[in-house]
Image (cartoon, rainbow, N blue to C red; front, side):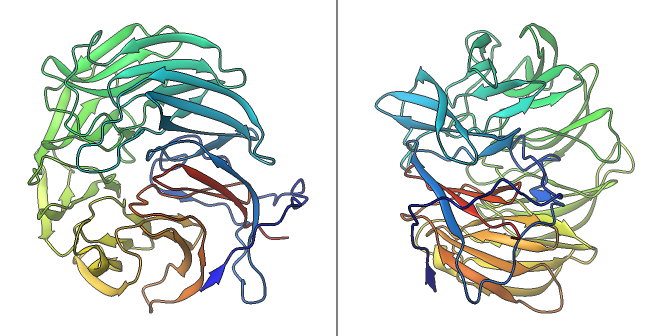
Length: 408
């Protein structure tokens, strides 16, 4: 294992790959934990990635977003959640936005949950108790605010709101979990309500626009998968996928007419055919139980982490799944209940103990290309972010590390 040494001098990182791409929300541009950016350097045999900068941002699990040279995340400290806006190249803090919040440490260390979303020069920030803010992304100036419980009639889930707001066609869409509208759309410029639909309690994943039908929004709530009409909010399709503690956290893997959902807590996965309004189960499996990490897709295969936090976390496996038959091609221990993203054709896997590994995304065989210790602590369940040649990793205790991992 290589231990990254911190250099006092910053790499001259102004000449980034022409293939650089921003990462504006949770899971990247399409919310599928994938970027087609081709700048990732893969040969680390004789070198180590440079740490561009480090920053302490407070407790939590909000992942990092990066747009137009600025990077953002939020963390908790001393009774407040704080959103940090920093220069992505230097780590210099440009502005912060703080708001009162409880720690929310129910059976874990607590802290922030939701990842902010950037669109149209604005950043949309959600707190785990229900506040929702719209801020100017460059200056941090407040444009509007509301509250998912107090103003929109929501029901805060047991472990707090964790989904990232969805921006689409001038609306911001959020899970409130309210009986009279569990999914709510607000005007992105004013915060005024546009529509609401559904009645399921909020889950811990983020709503997204379906591939097969851009007029539909999919959301993985506590009851399972719900499909809503984008213009009216009307719930059109439901599939029940309940877990032991009503926790659905991993993003559904959208394959077009089919969607693969996976959860932990003894439930497992199901491949659904949504060609018609009545979902058809193609297969089910309890050997694909993704508690924290969302699945990623490449060439008919899904890659993910099967396992459960707690005493048996060391038994968790990184796996490659042949989707059509629900058959695992290979699996490997050593990452705990970590997280992963797909960068072109390479997996970036962040273990729950803070090791970053690069693994080939191929069904041929497991092949780890490199591994580095990048953050400390435990329960590191926040997926890394890769944008414009920079890898952002954030620990649950609040250490934010930015690595230069693009091709020179």
